[in-house]
Image 1 (tube, helix red, strand yellow):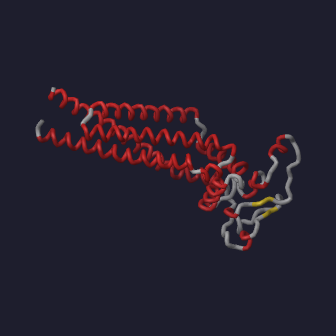
Image 2: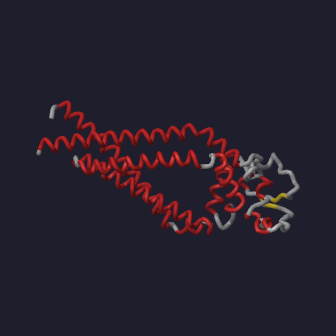
Image 3: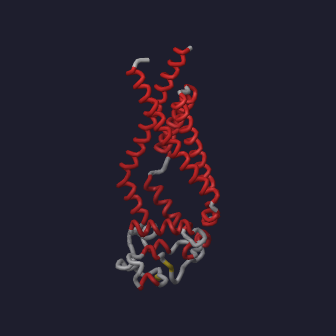
Length: 270
């Protein structure tokens, strides 16, 4: 093997090893997070009864993804270090399968998925009406951060909290046509412009017919605020997805080239 060919081979070997070592570390990180979510009883107890199935399903999907990425990184690292053609070939096959699965999922979402804005509105309305309550402190903490950070309140304003389990609203009675009126309703403190003020330090209660004070509460709904935030940062999300796709293609090309080079060296030795 000439010095130029040997230099190219060493550089290719170094690239494949480095990329896969980073991939292996990422996989271990995802595995660690998923195991923490799986065995942390506090997080499980904070999850509502109607969400426990989704919680476990999401955690197991994350665990499987972390395991797959860890195996891929291990195969790529060992294949490059030991110059093993079958390890590099297996890594290439794994990466190719994942790449096609991503394309398939993208096509499915494009043709059958709901628009992002509709998905956000549905999720926020579900959180405000059903998930934000003392039995689901994880949802409360998360949505409080959203209201404080985006300076918004409820689904489409403070009055959206009238129909919520946070205020013990009788959704079953509404479906049956029964009266569900309430004299006062509470609003989370995270809706306040300044939570340290007297208006917000006490229990914040309003009458349904009362117009929420714009000087005290955020008037914008979180559905619109989140949709606007997503739209403003969509280019960065698309850029990140494109970067991941390019890295996968680059990884496949490098591993395939290195695999062919190793195979050629093995044939010459034979």
